[in-house]
Image (spheres, rainbow over the protein chains, first blue to last red):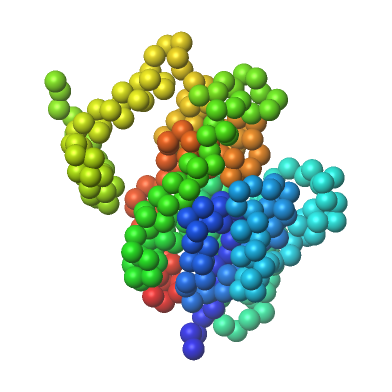
Length: 186
Length: 112
């Protein structure tokens, strides 16, 4: 038995989207860690029906993932489509971090959390992290899996996601987003 | 004709060489073709696509995620991912040293 506990925390939909397009959501369960998802992620996935949202929600409902409730997440569920708070995802992460810190103080066992984000989100994060919480990228996660010989190549997983994404992407790129006529199509 | 030197990830270089060989062409020819496509997309005045330029700046790390989302008037990560896929641009990535530091952290934390 390990002398410490580690949670792989998915606080953002980005890694789920990438892994869903690569059809490798199962990799989230590949490490010897508990996998938890912050509730605002499921709220967002439910709100935006996308090519992968159903696949991700089915995976999350599979019984291997724990969804962590946060105050703002509960508020979002209660209010439904009327919920409009800005940066709710970030506030949910901060809620999680407060709770994680409190819970850690009450445990005898060393406890760690790895917060999984896409690369481009990491540079914009400004959370105050406790000493036992670390931010990691999806690519670092995949590279570790490669190092452990769980997958053959991290880049192959990423490329599989991009390849699958291209099949859905043409419409999105060639149309200007609604409400922004200044943005011209490719 | 000029010769240029640039850094490229080992795995990407290996896969590019294999892909070029499969198409019975050279890596040189592939790079030249891709650069011509790039010029077509953003290089010529009057033919510039605003979407492409914004996405390219994001890919290069010159524009952050949040301003880009606002600028493109999109509010889901998946829309952004699909736009980047459609534009044939990679998502911005952290520096190699930073990624390796994270790989090491994972190893230390999980004891593997």
